[in-house]
Structures are given as C-alpha cells and as structure tokens.
Image 1 (cartoon, one colour):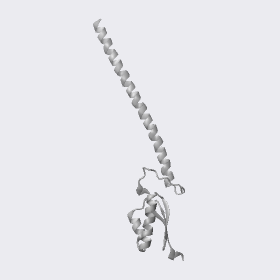
Image 2: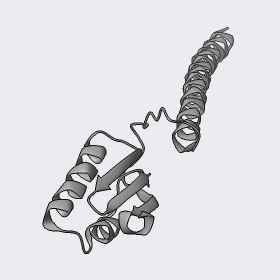
Image 3: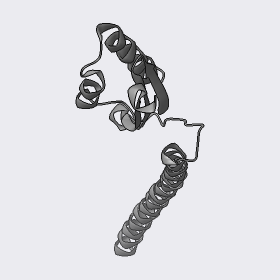
Image 4: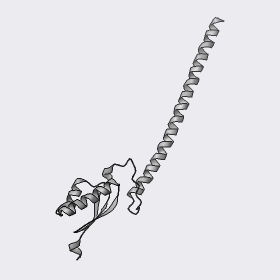
Length: 135
C-alpha cells in the first residue's frame, strides 16, 4: 500500500510539472507569434515609407525616422564642388540654402545663385545650370 501511494505521488508530481511546462511553452509561443506579427507590420510600414521616400515621382517625402541622414544630406565633397570658384557672397548663400534644406530634411530643393542654379535631390546634384551658358 505504501509503495502504491509513493508511485501515485510521484506520477502526480510529474504530471503537474508537465502541465506547468506545457503552459509555459504555450505562453512563449503566443508571445513569439505576437512579436512576429508586430515585426511584420513594422517591416511592411517601413518598406512602404522607404518606397515612397525613394520614388522619384513622389513629391511628398516623409523621411523615416530610422533612415540615416547620410541618405538625403549632402556630403562634404559635393558641398566643396558646389562652392568651388564662387564669390564669397554666393558661397554664403549656397551654404545657407544647403544648411536650411538639411535642417528641414528636404530631399529635393533648388539653389539659385548669381552664376546659375543647382537642383539637388537626395544630397546629390541632379542638375547644374550656369547662366553664362544660357545667355
């Protein structure tokens, strides 16, 4: 009789441990699924925002927060190219327009100076026009 009671007690403890373990696994799986669903939604949102950001036909750019500023800001070499050979006044003007555009996260903007103008997109020179070539 004593032997049967001990076996029954051990089996009860084992079944209790298995039930707790199964419940924990179910909770972990549920949390992973919820996290996976949230991740999928975030990835879809980020992909949509990224496609809109890089679409050249889209004029309403909303820059994603996670996107590094180097994606749309002008690098130092391009800035040096723009101001190379400009008068002091034009240099100040061009630098001010670049600074304004980067501060306001503009992806597309134009810079007009006394000798012509530039069209800038994603920090790159898209078009450069000099007035002396027009006249």
